[in-house]
Each structure stands twice: as C-alpha cells, then as structure tokens.
Length: 161
Image (cartoon, rainbow, N blue to C red; front, side, top):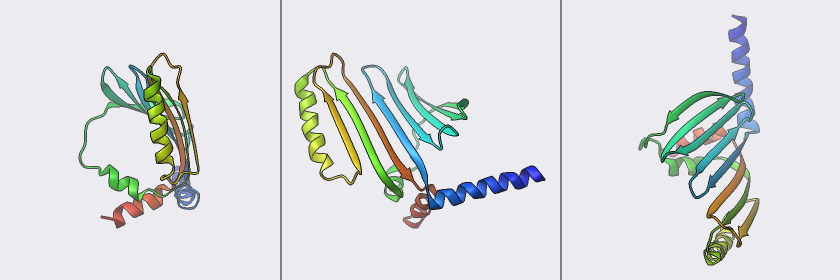
C-alpha cells in the first residue's frame, strides 16, 4: 500500500512539473547515404526513444534508464493527425543546429539560400546552419531542442477537435 501511495505521489509531481515547467525535448535526426535515424529524448536519461531505419524498415526503440524496454516495427497509422498535434504543441525556447553537405557544391549552396529565406519566417530562438561545400558524401544532420509542456499540448489538442 505504501508503494502505491509513493507511485501516486511521483505521478502527481511529474504532472505538476509538466504543467508548470515542461520538459526539455531533444530531437536528433540524421540522413547519410544509407542510414537514417531520429532520436527523441524526454526527461533523459529516464526516457529515450529512437527511430532507426534498418533494411528500409523503420523500428521504434524505447529506453528506460538506458535499458531497452521496447522494440517494434513502425506501421503506418492514419488515426493520429500529426499536423493538428503540431499546431497544439505548447513549446518555447526552440533551437536548431544543422549541418549538411552534398557531393555537388551547387546543391549545398542552393539549400543554404533556401534555408536562409526560411529562417526569416520561422519563430525560433536560435538557428545555426553549417553547410559543408567540400563533402565527399551526401548527408544531413539536425539537432533541435525545445521546452514542451505535454499537459498543455494534450488539452489544446482536445480543445481544437
């Protein structure tokens, strides 16, 4: 019974922290010539999720205290409305760091110009874009972080239904 009360207190503390402070959410994505991955850290090292593409099949890995607790193939689902969820997200202090390079320097330069135009229209606290004009391979690496209030996001999602 004491364990149940302790668990209830921990859950209540996490809910209060979520509604007042939010959690730091880090997104690390990369695309090399053959590999693609997306890493999401929320309350790291408590919870860590990784989406990795192996043999053209995306897999979801979930880690709890750096121990893998779940692995599954990702299937296409039409139930979750991603655009609506992104509009409902309550985020602040959004930062992006990106490095990329292509074998053809003109492609790298073209994308650098496009990203320069886009950054003028995006409300982001800090954007760092680093093109690599001397790359031997095609790659894109992005590191994004934000504060996310999950409770407010869920409430906004259901309000906008």
